[in-house]
Image (cartoon, rainbow over all chains, first blue to last red; front, side, top):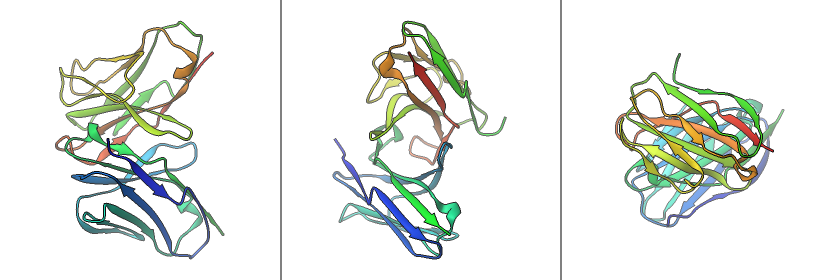
Amino acid sequence: KNEVEQSPQNLTAQEGEFITINCSYSVGISALHWLQQHPGGGIVSLFMLSSGKKKHGRLIATINIQEKHSSLHITASHPRDSAVYICAAGGGSNYKLTFGKGTLLTVNP
Amino acid sequence: IAGITQAPTSQILAAGRRMTLRCTQDMRHNAMYWYRQDLGLGLRLIHYSNTAGTTGKGEVPDGYSVSRANTDDFPLTLASAVPSQTSVYFCASSSGSQTGELFFGEGSRLTVL
């Protein structure tokens, strides 16, 4: 069974800081997803990647298949980035995805 | 409707009662999923459907059933609710193939007393 570990569990930053959230998984995968969940809110897909790097605005996601590791970076963080960030990894179909427990990010003004 | 709609958004239910959580999508996605989210455990898959007419069991299927009569609708039924089914339930679908980007509903908060 694929195990997905996220670190840190909780992260507090000051506005403007560069943020990194890490995700490690134990078995080979075909895709890794990064999701965002605001407090009391729904879940939004940020990235889906299987290799290399993707960028969307101030968010960057990278994956190293050999090391079974992915990172989510936020540049110039803002209080509206405060949310839980969830990593999910799996092989083949989405029903085989294993989800991490999430990283709670708080960005203070 | 735009995206995925879940209903109800919140419900308090007596143990032993039957409950159906509704999920409708208008994106013509083939694959749909039901997850429960519990503090400290993350998202766990209950049931899934890769296409209309087919369903499969996820990680925590006991006490739940689903049906997929058409592409748009994927209801989740609790035949006889128990307190351990108190959770937030998310319906999702994926674009393109079964490995596509995930789209989530807003969630249904269910409390079983």
